[in-house]
Amino acid sequence: MATSHTLTSRLLSCCTPLVLASLAAGCVLVDDDDGGGSAPIRDVAIVGTGLEFGECDGYCKTEVAIDGADLEATLSSLRGDLPQLVNRGRLTDEARDELNDLAEDLAGRELEPRYGCPDCSDGGAVSFDLRDGDDVTEHAFDHSQPPQEFEQLNAALSDIALALLTCEPSPRVELTSCTPR
Image (cartoon, helix red, strand yellow):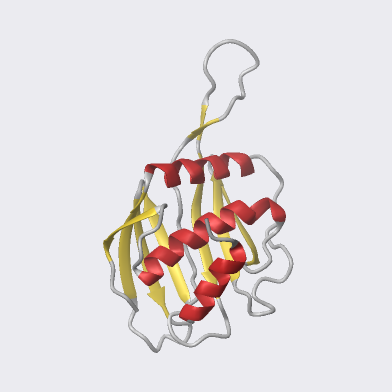
């Protein structure tokens, strides 16, 4: 699997940064039970994500929505000077499980809305929305220097976005319709 640095290099070489939005709807089991019986189902999911580069020409923003396993990415420029592109794909079963596990790991933790200075060094800004029950919180960090607690999440979201951006399938994404930029 590619490292965050490798993914950043591939993204920058494409000159098209991303903003992903709306990832991984679904429920996960959380063991809140003190004893016998099954654990209650807790509605936890990553419901939005993004990666955007401010110093970029071309398609510098990608928003990805997930409906179950279905992915829809909208690619756009920050200046609005290019037509939007819409690419579609599906999460593999393993990718959906991975995102649900990552959401479960983050659920209930006190997360900061912002870590460091996202995109200040033109390394890209990543954001994601975490739904825990009825609460949705947004969190952002620098793509090239994610906090340690977000390294696996950053790698997964970057891989998903890159597949939809470049129209190249990945171990996490099966493409259904894709227009290369």
